[in-house]
Amino acid sequence: MQYTVRKVALGDFFGLLEVEQLAFLGDGYSPYFIKMIPHLYPDTCFVAEAGGQIIGYSLGARDGHDSEVGWILTAAVRRGYQGHGIGTALAKALVHAMGEQHIKTLILTVEPSNPARELYRRHGFVETKFEEDCYGLGKARYYMERRLTP
Image (cartoon, rainbow, N blue to C red; front, side, top):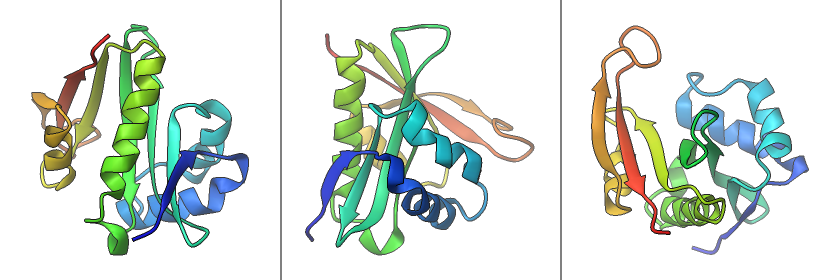
């Protein structure tokens, strides 16, 4: 499968929104937040494209309280494109970008049943905590962390 990974661009709103809505079935980020991603995170958001269509994206940000900590806020790949290394390519691009910003620890949260937990494990993340009502009642998440080498 042919695809490219690049930094997000200002014109990516509708592609990002579609990936977000399909991946999280209305339980993801709002359209307003998606619209702001290229403006707020131009160096830590990556998109995967195939045939001129956005097929996945990853987004990270520096922690507002600890400049050595970064968060992977989201990552998603369209269902028909999963299993082709696109998630791995997006994760690698994001981890590299966060390392260039001198982030020493990356944190993310993941739903217990999400198969991406295994992807994160393969990329050196370890589960550090479980929170039953992390994003509201019944919205449990595992916290996973990875130390980045200096």
